[in-house]
Image (tube, rainbow, N blue to C red):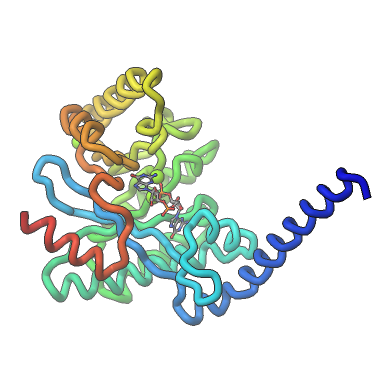
Length: 278
Ligand code: C2E
Ligand code: MG
Ligand code: MG
Ligand code: MG
């Protein structure tokens, strides 16, 4: 065998192993739902003007007995392949409602946002399904925020407009996730009456050369949110200087490792209690 064949054999063996792992994982998805192996992790969102945790984002983790703790980067493509992403989103909402119910009873509820996959939002019955789950638990709609990704809009702004309106008429908050990373942010702001934008992390992951330009863009976007009376959240904030900059620019909320990583529900509860006591 020449070296080329050997390299090829090695490569394909690795690919084969990855494929097997992938197939095994896919086969475990139903069991994962049945055994509730998918977990809601919560990342605090800190309001800058009073330095309190007023909301949290729900992010999925798969606590798998076979594969360990898996992140959305691995989970979502798997579920998408099997057409189970919608099931995950509603599973997450259901579990978010369970958390909220407990918090409301303990008189310490804050708003929780959850992510909805870009295709699901346009399916017939989406709004009814969401309301049905929330009302099943008797949760006040104000406690729920739906994060939709900017890339959903594309050429469907009429359809998105009606869905957003209907959700808002029912008292839910809508945020546009990863704002600024997609194609039509500004056009979307014109057409869709969202409550909140979440500034994409890319603006804060720049090298020194582009930092000034990134800052100019951020302050421009924040000015726009003030004029349009849209709530602003910055994501992926990892250091104090970015936090201070955003505070000066009048950004409403910060979410990022600077404050905390996404936490298990009980760790989040301790974090929130300690943080809000300060
Ligand atoms: P996202 O909705 O934009 O969520 C923010 C992501 O940024 C999270 O990654 C979070 O852990 C990460 N992050 C937060 N602060 C920092 C920081 O300071 N530095 C860095 N480097 N990262 C930070 P995660 O949990 O891996 O989720 C990735 C994406 O997967 C989410 O992005 C969201 O689009 C999607 N996702 C997560 N859970 C769900 C879900 O239940 N349903 C759906 N449809 N999508 C989900
Ligand atoms: Mg999100
Ligand atoms: Mg985001
Ligand atoms: Mg504002």
